[in-house]
Image (cartoon, rainbow, N blue to C red):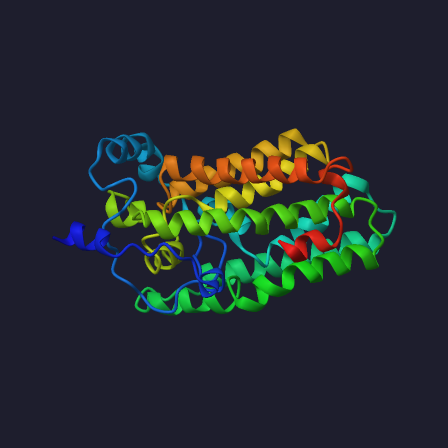
Length: 305
C-alpha cells in the first residue's frame, strides 16, 4: 500500500520554487526547510534487480572508512562542486588557468574567494552538534546553499573576471553556464525518481564526519541523479576543452564521484547518470555556441542559464 501511494499522485511539474529550494549536498541548490521521512523510491524501485546490482557495485565504497583528517580533506572535492557559492572561485581559477594574468590581484582574489568558501565548508563540518543534527542542515541552507548564493554567484564571478580583464574569462563563462544549465535536468530527474540515498536504504556505516550525514538525511530522497557529479563534470569539461588540463579535469571528476559514494550520498548509477547528464548538456552547449566555440562564451550566457 505504501508503494502504491507513492505512485498515486506523481508530481510531474517542477515549480520555480523547486529551483530555489532544491537539493542539499547531492543537488547543488538550497536544502528543504524541514526534515522529511524518506519514502519509497520511484526509480530504481527499491529491491528491483537494478537497485540490488547498483547497491552491490557501490558497497565497497560504502564500507570504506578513512580517518578524521583524511575525511576532512576528502570532503572538499566530494562536496564543493555542488556548492553554488564555490562556483565563483572555481570560475576565476578556470579563467586564470585558461588565459593567465600578469596581475597579482587576480591570483590573490581567486585565492581569497577559495579560502572563504573553504572556511564556510570547514566551519559547517567542524561545528556540528551530534545532539542537534537539524541545526547543521539549517546552517548549510543559510550559507553554501542559500538563495543569494544561487542568484548572485554568476554576476559576481562575471563582474570580477571583467574588472580584472582576465584573457581566459570565456572559460569562466562556459563553466558557469554549464553548471547552471545542468541543474535543470538533474532537479527534474530527482523530482521524478525520488530515489532514497544509500544512507537511508543501504548498510552504510557511520563516517568520521557526522555533519555530512546529518545534511544528507535532511533530504534523503534525492539520490538519483547526483548533482555534485554533474557539477564536477561541468567544471571538468571546460577545464579540458578551454584550459587544456586533462589530468586536473579527470582527477576532479573522479574524486567528486567517489566522494559521493564514500559518504553514502549516492549509488554508482546516480553519479554516472549525473555526470552523463552534465556531459550531454556540455556537448549541446558547445554545439549551440558554434562557430565561436564554448571557450568564447559571452558574459550573458551564465546569467541566462
